[in-house]
Image (tube, rainbow, N blue to C red; front, side, top):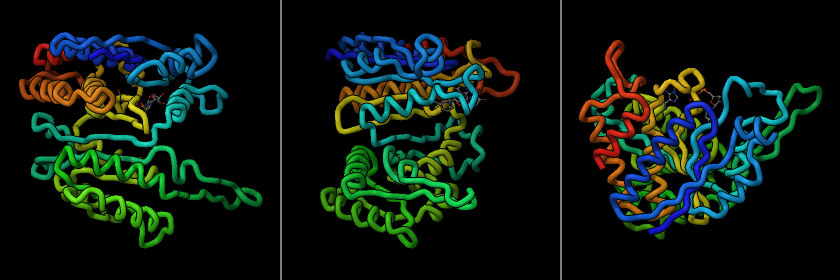
Length: 353
Ligand code: NAD
């Protein structure tokens, strides 16, 4: 197949890890007979320096003409001024909004070869393989907010509509059909009216998915069960805020932030794929970045925007294969032992595909 992919390296290690992920996609194209066209564009701090805005119109124009967007990371010391009117992360928020990307998918998996780098006991980590489906464009982060009086009180509102919950629930159930067929819907229905609507709506959508098991879990109990029995979860679907908090809690299972991919999806085929980590200015330009999160994001791109499931699985198996074979980047190697550079690790993954 032919596909156009917009590549937004951004700042810091974003540049190194997207180079690695594009290399891997190029290998997939040649191995499976596809034609991928890559177009680079600006986002983040580098875009501010060159154009004065974190997301130039030219970037959006290019992205609109593509099937998928692969992003590195944005930000860095140079732009780290919270009161600056133009900031790198504005680029991220704007591009998500522009394409209506309402679903954020974050898989978290433990690799046996890396279990020692997780703070959890090894026996708890066996078989951990979960997918967070977080609602990304609604809820309390987008509700009305106000400070009152002399600033001695303030409120934020959590508002969800039935269509907003329906569309995220459909994404979760469909994802579960391709996995272990279990959805845990996270809410706080015992206290919040918005969460009672969430539970009622997810229950209704479930009627279309008889092959998938649905559990409702209260967010506080979910936070505990993620630590005490992480392997029991398959797909978790959650509101914007609960998904934000719980997916960060679960990220430690993978052993390093550098391991984790993500996809942001909307109603159209186009999606935005990016590693969970930031631009890591402390290690940028040194070949120390772990490109796994970016490479696995590329695998998600193959799966969700290009419907190339076999190719996605081949990339995931190659990553697992090189880790099992002992390949390590700096963040996942024992102190004092040798490790592969970002590009050497990517080469090892390419060789396995
Ligand atoms: P960070 O994720 O960049 O780094 C946190 C720590 O993890 C650092 O010690 C870093 O070296 C390490 N790390 C991160 N990714 C790694 C990788 N792939 N391989 C090896 N080690 C890795 O978070 P931070 O330090 O809080 O933020 C740095 C900058 O990134 C800030 O400007 C922040 O605003 C930005 N940021 C961007 C995004 C994004 O683009 N989505 C997300 C988070 C932070």
